[in-house]
Structure formats: C-alpha cells, structure tokens
Length: 251
Image (cartoon, rainbow, N blue to C red; front, side):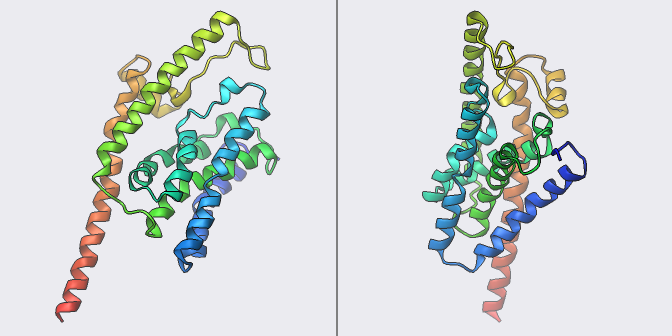
C-alpha cells in the first residue's frame, strides 16, 4: 500500500501528525525537566538520521543536501533542545512549518510504501520536526518571545539567500560537467524553491514577481502576519492569566 496524496491513508497520516505530538506532550507533561530534556533531545536527532538516510539511500547526494527548510530545522533542532536556546526555539516555530508542508504537500513522496524505510525516515522525522519546537514552548523549556520576530525573519532570509547561491553554483556545475542522477538526468536542484515555485501559493507569488529568488520575498509579509498572530495570541492569553491572578490575590 502506497502513501498517496489526499487519499484515505494520506489524510489519516495528516490527522495523526498533531495527535502524535499531543500524545507526546501529555506523556512528558508531568515529568521532570531532566526527563523532558532527555526524551526531546533523543527525538530531536531523528531529522539528522533522515538526512543521512537520504544522502546514502538515493545515490544522488547533490539532490538530497539538507538545504530545504525542514532540513535546516532538523539540523538546528538538537541545538535548540539541548541548549534550550530562546532564539533558536522561536526561530524553529517558523521553520517547523516546512515539516508540516512536507507532510501535506507530499507529491514527490506519495509513491512511498506505507511503513517502508523510505516512508519511516520521511514521515516520522517531519512529525517531530513540527512538534518539538511547539513542545519546547508548551512544556516551558523555552519561552515564547515576541522580540525574536526580527531575528527570525532575518536569519530565515539570510539562509534563503545563501541557499539560492548554492542552487546556482550546483546547477551550473552539473550542467557544465554533465553530472547526472541515477535516472540519467542532468542534476538541477531547487532548494527552498528559490529557482522556481513548487506549489500553488508560491506560483501565485511568482505570477506577481516572475523572477527567481526575488519572488520569495512576498513570503515575508505572510510570515510577519503568521508570527504576529502567534505572539499576539500569547500576549493576550498571558495578560488574561496575569489579570486573573492579580484579582485573585486582591480578593
């Protein structure tokens, strides 16, 4: 049985994604900080295991470099957990969206056999890459800080810019050298989709700014709104709780 796209199996796995992370939250909620850190620390390396699997399994390392957003998340996640880094933890609240999109928009992976090693090393690391940054906040291991919005956007766009130049260098190198993948095709990479859009939303952005690299800057206001909603909601909830505590103390 293959994973498929928006069939019954795929939809079940999408539903399971938050449920697995919710289950992990309740399993850790009453535990000591030490236990929480050990469990999340171990699980945080699942993305790195997936990166190594992809580099070795497909016979085309240049096409599986850890340069997509979910891969950057995977590389940073162990540091965010083990260091309890405020800046990294807040950054990964944004980068974890790459893992969510990888599960929902799974066109390139739809042919994976369910519970095969290719599926396991794709699905479960993405589940954890999505959930662990949120769990760090919910368990109180890292604080949600609105002041990190600027650094989050800057780090993301600097990373995107560096990766765009890597795309250009790799593509020129492969084109001039005739470097092919196992299918015999000239290798052309598109990490973080800086060259061409890969989904309807990015295609909309590209129709507005039809230029590689630059079109992705239309994501910035979307990201700002997304982060604004998260931090705004957190501020309102915190304010309401503090007001209730103050009123209770006054009574």
